[in-house]
Length: 223
Image (cartoon, rainbow, N blue to C red; front, side):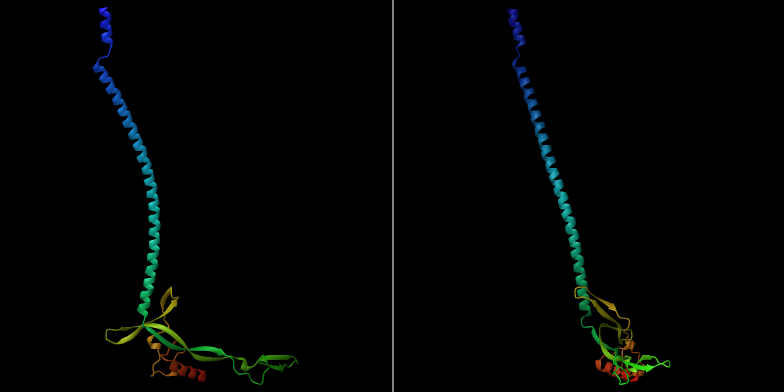
């Protein structure tokens, strides 16, 4: 009987072993719980990172679109400011000049021709024929034509004021631009010491309509 009790005593776990086992189980549960928590946290962070990535892609697209729109608006504003500054620069430089402009005008019908301004005659072979009457030839008539230009007056090294260049406005109000008019030069602008007979009607400009009309009258009489 004593032997039986000894066996039973040694087989029965003591208090220390119980604590060790409990500690192991507690540790395993704790490690498992910590592992599950970390996995859950990683899943959550990964999901959040995916959302952040998608948001970043959206933000990047929106930024690029806004950047392109701002570039377009800036370019448009620069063009508007450029045109505005150019118009302001030209303001006060407007010059109105006149040039003799030729046009064809029908002459008065004479009494020697028919309604088609043709003269009827009989050929040596006895055939009826027609030829144009001299009154059917259109007459060249000169009239003043107005030209609006923009001039710049510069001062040379001698202190004398002279016209450097003339420009003309092109385009619309929203898209205006100026181009150099090479046909107008200072030496081509009429002055009183010039004689009409020496002028070139193609490139001579007048400062007043009356001066241009006098020149047109001269051309109409002498052509």
